[in-house]
Picture 1 (cartoon, rainbow, N blue to C red):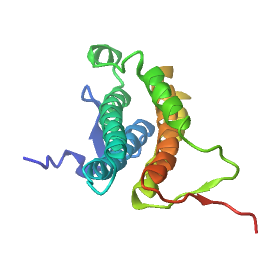
Picture 2: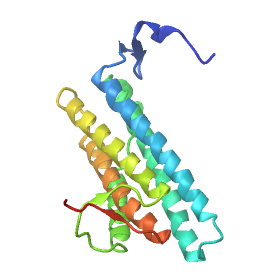
Picture 3: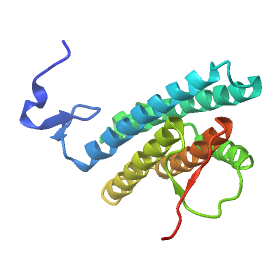
Length: 195
């Protein structure tokens, strides 16, 4: 059965069984990472569709396929983070799948590789240019909100530095990806102009 009725009183269960209010800072943090994961899922599907667009050159389709693979890995790591954030009990936490120790370093490699393909920024970027790029920016802003909530939670609870670092790198990845997508789609970036 999909509904349990146990949350009708405004509470939810953490991993391990403890019940807390649905506005608990821990729930806000892992719930926002879940929202981020959904937005990256949408972005990944858009990128996958571009990788199968035979109007694009083969090397461009391959680059979209590479992005898709990276995003699926990020989604899996974010699911690990969601579960860890949803766990208050230390004994239960220790038994869970942990974030790979090289996860942030791997993403830094992706970011550096993408950034090397981009023109130097001379102004702030305004989200848009294409639906795929805009979706990357939506995911980026949700990622920044998730990061703020995780940092706030870390002021009250023990949160591993690796989690904070990974979420921070994810927003950087989404930013450079939003720019790369426009290059691959042969579309122009939108830049802020002072009025």
